Image 1 (cartoon, rainbow, N blue to C red):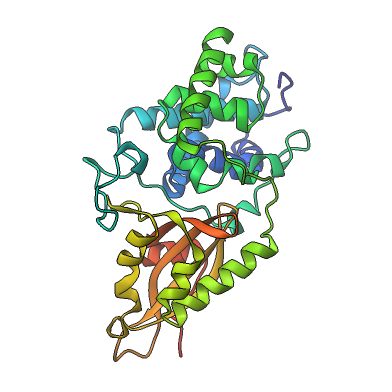
Image 2 (image 1 turned 180 degrees about the vertical axis):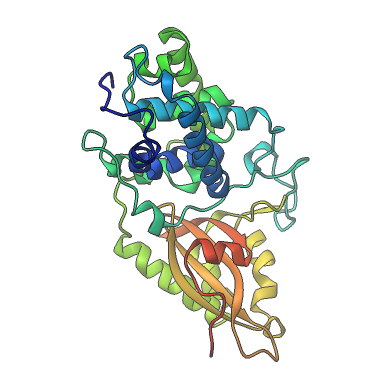
Amino acid sequence: MSSAEPLDLHDESAFAALFERHRGELQVHCYRMLGSLEDAEDLVQETFLRAWRSRETFGADGRFSFRAWVYRIATNACLDELRSRSRRVLPPDVAPAADPTVPLSPPADLPWIQPYPDRLLDQVTAPEEEPGAVVVARETIELAFITAIQHLPPRQRAALILRDVLGWSAKETASLLETTVASANSAVQRARGTVRQHLGERTAWRTRSEPTPEERELLRRYVEAHESADADALAALLREDARLTMPPHPTWYEGRAAIMVAAAPAFDPAFGTLRSVPVRANRQPGAAHYLRASGETEFRPLAIDVLRVEDGRVAEITSFDGSAYFVMFGLPLTLDR
């Protein structure tokens, strides 16, 4: 990463064009750091502004290519953002309730974890020496991983992403974080231990981005269960230890029994009629649910569920409500009959 692309530092249009080549991957990088697509979009724009203001420093010491240089700026911008946030509690931080049907509530907010639509991930490109497939590899973009790394202190989070996600060397990581190689390695080791505690020894990680036939069939049955208001069919798709979270709401449900209690109102005829559209986010299957309330003629946005599948069943549902997510996914805000 020591070579620098020729660049006229006084030509703003040329500078912007070069930056745009890296915008997609920088947005994914900021998303991993922050867990929020909206925040990531803002931080990429902040990165551009910082880069333009400090453009005279580019290549001053010969250590960084343009790509590495803007990654450094983006990482520091994210670290600044994270320092300004108060610590937030995630589901694994709180012990389960004695009654499995009672929703769990933490003493603080859930972070604003947001989904990343696959349609945007598919647009991410990276230089030939850093294939886009690596930048958005499934095991480093799934919601479970994004959630797990939110437990890390900011600098540990950055070190882990640079080393284990982007494949930077210990020396490159230490240089970007302005620390020693020994300190960078120590941060990565501590981060790996924390992530392992929250993810366990996962066996379902894989780098492929396309859904498996198993996932397609499970999603078809998931959609069918909601559209037919068949609670038993939904229950049959869930692992006994499945989890339902609904960020940013400070409530989640542990276990099939608790999830079915939470889902019961949606299967009541008085609730209305659901129509569900298959989607994909974070390289995972999902469903966008539209509701036609009693007396209405149009289906309107209700929620988008992103599913984690293990051993042929749903292990986790992360549900995002609000029409803003439908816009994010490029979905219509109404469906007719």
